[in-house]
Amino acid sequence: MMDLQNVLTILFMACATYLTRTVGYVALRNRKLSARATAVLEAVPGCVIISVIAPAFVSDRPADLVALAITLFAATRLPMFQTVVIGVVSAGLLRQFIG
Image (cartoon, rainbow, N blue to C red; front, side):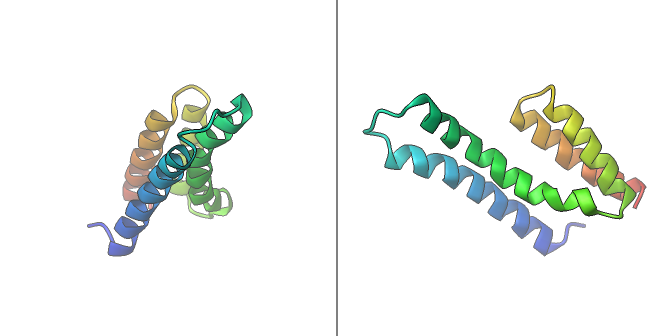
């Protein structure tokens, strides 16, 4: 069973990721953006996700460290959505079976 705090954290992360992307585009929709500004707007959702998984780097739980390694490997080869799905699924399964 999922803890309410975990569910709320996931929902707030999803909202923060969505809002950082859409608010930037809505606020700047009538302006011509440079390539650099566009790159910054596209990188913001990734920064939100990284800030959430960063604590796993100092975790003492083997399941978290293995899930982190799997996610990092996926991030080098796959787009962000697939990487997030792989990270969430691997963390959930590994925590269930490894502890």
